Length: 358
Image (cartoon, rainbow, N blue to C red; front, top):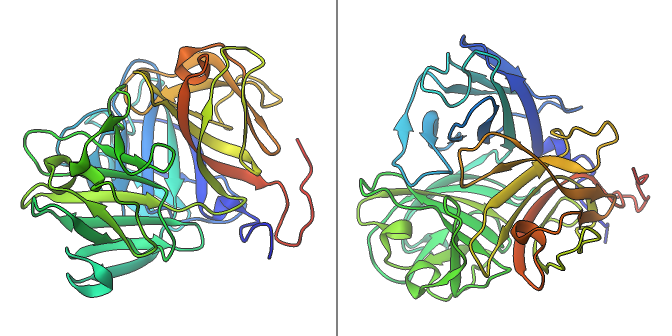
């Protein structure tokens, strides 16, 4: 069996840096191959603080949610306006999320789904109907459904493989519900909130203490994941060898820190401490002050509106990432962390030939 089925990760994930103009513009991705994204997560880097915008092709380009807040979904024609064959387009940015002028810079993290589906209640073992888009090669799907506040509900996800990371948002509950995160590194009895610093918590009403299958994931009756009459969106990932990795590690509080093996040189990494409060750290290979790439030192936060912060945190290596900070946030002594990572290049390509370490 081949080491990986994905030789060019940029067909399925890309990071794009751009500057705001305050006028409508098209943003072209930089990869060697054109990619039409289906999920775009945009965050202002500087100057000043700003919430992110999360948009996807299933809900529609103008439907925006922020990862830093539990707010309901907004419909904004001034922000993302379309998903294009080689990137995406934005409006004048007057609501402040994706395209303000005044020397404002942005980063967009883009994933490709691509195959639409509509699954009725009762089909494929699902209790609730769902509509979405999947990319089984890349192990990614977008799923939308309407909740019923009933325990032990199965939702079809389309992947044909087991999701190991799910982030789910109630789009319409006026109380403002947090993002719920399932991660295999903390198991089916626990959840995290993407928009807070909170440690993992145990609540059966989220995942019903049930591990997802290759067909469905299970939710409880809590409003955060299954509000009655509320619409929800879930982003689901399964692990693809050589392209994506979702795991856990233990810190050592040392600048010669814990090495995390992924099987590829990362392009993007997000980490979260799970046994205590701390930030969700996001780092990528496009935002670094070092001409040689390492250290990876420009961090943003899924849970905070803060501008980009210069903090040495990781080295991205040919086969994983190495902690370079004695920091409670990402490398505390005996502290527990989960991560998700996507590849710049696999360690070995589909023909079994090692890629050059860089």
